[in-house]
Structure formats: structure tokens, C-alpha cells
Image 1 (spheres, rainbow, N blue to C red):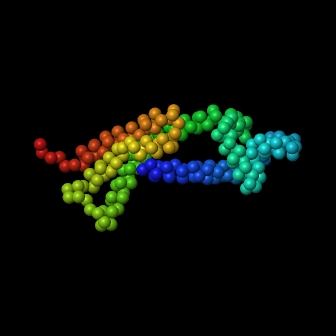
Image 2 (cartoon, rainbow, N blue to C red):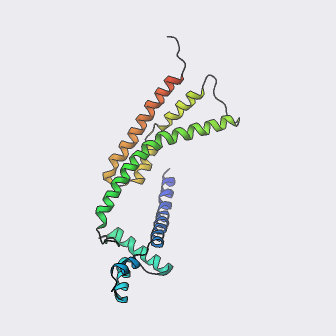
Amino acid sequence: MFRFILRRVLWAIPTLFVVTFLVYCAIRFGTDPVQSYKRTNIHASAKDLARYRKLNGLYEGFGGYIRGYFEWLHHFITGPWPRTIKGRQRVWPRLKDSLANSVRLGLVASIVGIILGNMLGIFAASAALIRLGWARLPTGVTWGQLYAASLCGGIGFTMSLFIGTLAFPTVEHAPLVRLGVMIASVAAAVLGYMALRWSSPHRPS
């Protein structure tokens, strides 16, 4: 188990570099801050443009993209973070608002993913196997009970907390991650119980 986790962590490091570099390139392809700077500073000289490019890491060519990416990464890790290219606004206040929204969306996504994702995955896979003739419903079990049991698949903490911790690793987000997983698990348990009660035949006492 330790080797499995270690391999995943080691693979995550180059994956993080590749993904962030691709995002950096996509942003550079989609915008041209130098042209915006020239429009707002019509008397800017070639020296001003060169200084602006160096200040923001806007080097040309593929090698320039690599150099700009690692300069950005260095500033991101070590700080202080530079101001935005457009408007020269401070990065942290804007990023803090974005992170807060991301946490709220992540909380909702955790709840929906654990309940609907597990339910749909379990029920769809089971139904497909039964329809193909590779499996069959146990004697006395109905489709409604299978659906109710798939709802109970959302009950659980270990893997959900692990994924949530990877997505939001900071200490201040940990309570929200646990809260989202707890709400989703309790909701899955309640909905699963209600569905099982509704789908199961009433037996005489």
C-alpha cells in the first residue's frame, strides 16, 4: 500500500509540471499583453517594451515560453507574487476570492459526486451486466432494491477524504472537505435507507 501511494505521489510531480506548463502556454496563446500595453502606452519605446516583456516573463519562442514558465513558477513558490499583467492589480486578493469559490464548488461537487456518481456508476454497471446476461439479480431482489443498494454506495469516508485532501491540501480547507464528505455520506445513508424501505415488500409482523 505504501509503495502504491509513493508511486502515485511521484507520478503526481511530473504531471503537475506538465499540466501547469500547458495551462501557462494556453494562456499565452490566447492573449497578447504586449499589444494591450502598446495600445494603452502609445508612446512606449522599444526599450519600454523590452522591459515590460522581461518584467512579466513574456519571452518569445518556445524557449521563451519555457523560460517564462519557470520564472513564473519560481515567483509562485518563493514569492512575492507579482501584480497582474492587466491592470497591475495584486494577485492574492483575487486569488483568495477564486479559491473561496473553488472550495464552495468543491463542497457541492463532493456531495453530488459521492451520491449521484456512486449511485449511477454502480447501478449502470450492474444493469448492463444483467442485461448482457453476464450476471443476474439474486432471487427475490427487485430492480428497485438494486437501485437503493447503489445509493448506499455513497457511504464511506476513506477514499473520499483522500481525494478531497489532494484537491484541497491546505489546513484551512480541511474542515470543509470533511464536512462535505460527512454530509454526502449521511445523505447517501438516509436516501439509501428510504429507498430500501420503499422498494422492499412489507412483511407481516
